[in-house]
Amino acid sequence: MERLKKVKIKWSANFAYAIGLITTDGNLSPDGRHLNITSKDLKLITDFKKCLNIKNKIGKKARGHSKEKKYFVVQFGDVNFYEFLLSIGLMAAKSKTLSKIDIPKKYFVDFLRGCIDGDGNISISYHPESKHPQLKIRLASASLNFLEWIENEVYKHIKTNGGWISKDKSVFTLNYAKKDSVKLLKFMYYKGDYYYLKRKYRIGRMFLNK
Image (cartoon, rainbow, N blue to C red; front, side, top):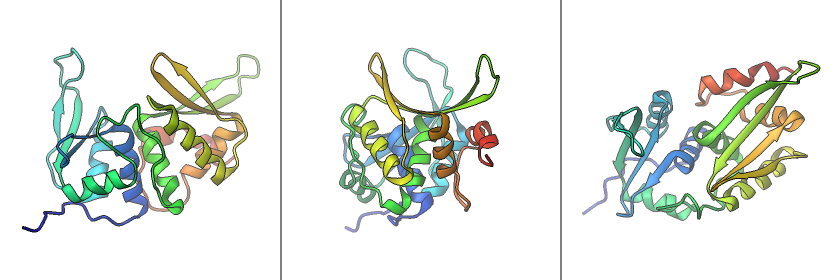
């Protein structure tokens, strides 16, 4: 019996972006078939579906001890795609064991943008004396190895000078500030047709023309 293949496995900017979302906000079931992605952001879930061209319905769920269903979730089964994800470095119960993901160099930028849209943060603070805006870009993960790999890959692409990893309880955060954050922002939002969360883009866009 031929396997049902819901997802076309072919690298592109949008496919790599979806892989970034799965890496951060996704979950692979131990059954070897199903995967889901959960987010507070409906736009992220709808864009994920478009990137992979899947038609599954979007549901809502609660998290932790809360009974309020305020998270959006899409779940689907595809053995071929599941096995592909395993082959590039993803796995079930991946949060603390994640390491290098096998992404084509050409599409690392789109994968990274997916990670930032998933578990990342773009923020602006103001210097207490000069009042100049200061950009900061962060990516959180329970896996130190994964963030060290991201930091190394970012350096290879744009030659950053001062990214650093901090820790708060069981969560690690890769941080970029000052010139590195602006360089990273311009790297992620290149000229072209691709998916991204506009609410995060709008925070940092004042720096794109500097």
